[in-house]
Length: 258
Image (cartoon, rainbow, N blue to C red):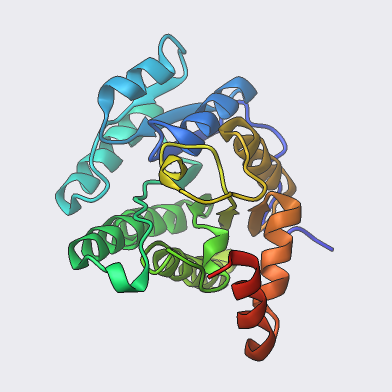
């Protein structure tokens, strides 16, 4: 079967902008891409963490900004272009995670989560889609989550934001593939990051950030549209999501003990 995106066969000289790269998957992905020869601009709110991550690498640049701030995006985009000359690939990874049951909803958390996890991506693509279309090439990668596949305990906010990103990525691919723009949907399972450190339940298939980064890089190199991992757990949850509701809900209750 042909790859849905052109496989990236050589990272040398590729210009990659990573948004949400101060820790976790984003930081590990920055290290992996720099090691592979890419030029990388890292962005997040915490400038000190970004500087610590990238120095003294000659092909690493820091553009600190808040992805939840609508006014900050145009300037961040221009600074990234100035630092690297052009952009080949952007990875949207900035997110917040508030594990919450439906009977514990905090509407302020709901608003902040959707604003960063979803609207923040829209702010970025509003700048980058016209840029890539004009160039006739480029790539958009959106980090969502396998929690988007089906309703899960304590994911009443986070899972909904990631489901929105799954739909968004599918629409972007449908509209942009013919214009030379690659689109990647990254659906991780549990990864050992500051976000998942708050979980008070067993996390099947828990991965290290470096393992997640390698899975993402491998997906780019194969030209995959959806990059999901870890293979066993992510595949099982995807299979469960296809089951009829009368089978899926009882099975999830049994698995999650809720």
